[in-house]
Amino acid sequence: MSKEVLNELREKITATDSQLLSLIAKRQTLTAKVAETKVKHQISVRDKSREEQLLLRLIKQGQECGLDPHFITKLFQVIIEDSVLQQQSLLHEWANPDSRLQINRVAFLGKKGSYSYLATQKYFSRRPGDLVEIGCNSFAQIIDKVEKNEADFAVLPIENTSSGSINEVFDQLQHTRLNIVGELTHPIEHSLLVHEGVRLEDIKTVYTHPQVFAQCSHFLAGLGNIEVKTCDSTADAMVKVGELSAPNAAAIGSAESGHLYGLKAIKSDLANQKENHSRFIVVASQSIKVPLQVPAKTTVIMSTVQSPGALCDALTVLKNNNINMTKLESRPINGNPWEEMFYVDMLGNIEDGPMQLAFETLRGMTRYFKVLGCYPVEEISPTRIAASQALTEAQKE
Picture: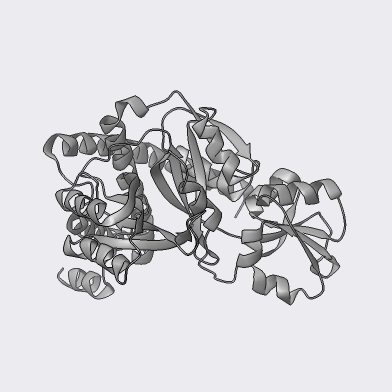
């Protein structure tokens, strides 16, 4: 194939890509109109049955065009997820008109390139207004920034699929007046980052955050006799190695962020669990209203009376009101030896009747009860259809 023919084909691909972008933008405009209609008629954001039928029809049309069903499925799962998140974002804006800011000042852990920084970028990419990044050295400093009105929001990691709950954040939530207004789950992809030319066998010192050390303990143990030095964040670890310019030092962090500090990845997928994700919460001074059409999660903290079965009785209240609990975490109460504060995540909107009944009952049977926040669920489960269902639909033709 001559160079001229290749260039001509590439130009046609570029033109086709531009058409695809225009069509995607048109689809998003229609999605906004759908969201407006759902607000007027109190219709839920997701209609799983319609999504499944849509996916089946698209797979069938794609096959007629010679496209692979798996490719069609992956492509439109992403498009449907984006549509759902866009609709939820629009509904949130309309339900909370005073929350729209021209500038979003957001505090997070670490410098540019930390996982909290990446999560902040991801979450606020869907929010209106410019983003002002405020990197902090500790969770206490992050919360303090919002409490003193030096930041509008804070992004805090709350748990990880590999290393578990981040207890320090739970302890901070025990004493703050801030409200949880959002959440997101972000994939954590740990890589070993070094200067150009450094080999794996050269490494003597690894810089990392304590949580990352726990998540990558198997890999680090396999390196043998190395020194692990902890830093306040993954970004601080990258900064340290970047400044050292040492031929035997490495940092663990995001390969994408490593480029910001002149570092390259020589080993990836370091986590003990390959499916490694962190859940982050977003907190602010004011609570928000979540439209009933949007799937919601509510987080509370409570302490029960010191009697046998007290916690079980409290959780039975949720069961009796058909409320699904998704997380239960206990933390010691400072100054009260052997007493625990319980953090409970549950699916549901605080304005739902069953949730209100449950909370009224819990307030009457617990020593302390506080709602930390009601916020949209942003972990969108992908639309799925069984392979047998797709095959059956194809055979109908």
